[in-house]
Image (cartoon, rainbow, N blue to C red; front, side, top):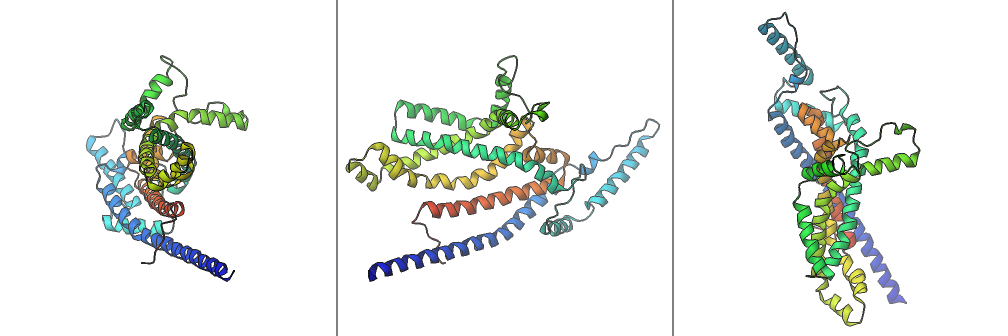
Length: 357
């Protein structure tokens, strides 16, 4: 009894120590986010300012039939100078950056050059749409990729394995903009098959519909965007899952489980699956920010009012405050994704410990 009690105390102390080290590790990573984020903002801020194009061009344009060309040019130049001074574009780039950085530290990303609305309010309006699509893409990708990868590994070199391998390589190689365009042409066109709507999130006149009717209408309209965004993700994850499972089922403990007479289903799903999921979890950190970047194409093609479409419109209009806010959001998602991967990696694999270094 004394030995058992002492063993329990040692386990408790070890768990507390691991929890403390994990907290210290998370705090250290969060502190490292600050210089990383500053470096990212310096690079993106400089590139955005040095890119060709002038945001004041969209604000000027004097029209007048009775005015001479030089008078129009003079008035346009005066308007440009006014907006440059108003937006702080007449200052050196390093001063513009420090002003922007100071405002960002207080949560103020400025106002949009296009409509003078606060940037954060415009982003917050679009986040629910992009977040819902991203979550559906992640869920759809993992739900399909894991079973396909398991089956392909368990039936290696079978006809189904060869067919799925070929199709997955095809899906992975297809660009999302081409898939979205072909889907609209052939699946949302009266000249071929009119199954899905071409654009938008809501049907005109749906304001008076019931909650479930609105929910079904929105889900129905998101089938094509979610499918087009998921093809490359689930194809890549399926191949990674197959490779990871093949590596695990060749290990000694799996052969021992088979030697004990366990069924292949039990061996694969109970003994091999957990260890084979470790590399798949690490890929989650790279999928999160890529979905925000990939949503630019899909949301623009399907006219979905999300963050991606907003980013595309900001790039066209040279809306610097909105562009920088979008880039900061993508950078934060990337770093949070990497931190989430480290935490999940330690949870799934008990051999991983946050050692004190």
